[in-house]
Image (cartoon, rainbow, N blue to C red; front, side, top):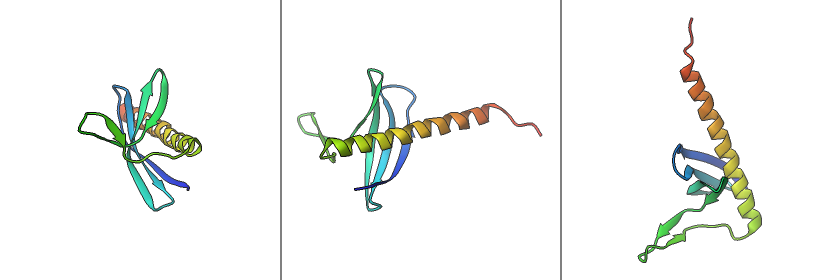
Length: 100
């Protein structure tokens, strides 16, 4: 299975959740609401989940093996870092007015 696209849908400045991503697999299946979390100075991903009646959470979709989880996490975190760089560049460009 190939990760064919990763999109960072939203970035967050505050709190442990840093971003929400969508991933496309084999140009045929999209997985939405993958969260990028920062805890103990480390970034990791959390798969989409739903809340059960007993207030616990259950993943809706998840990788079956560690190798694919590692590949998925690497792809999402790479897209996250790129989105952060792009956001910083856009912010710098809006702070420096261009004079003509």
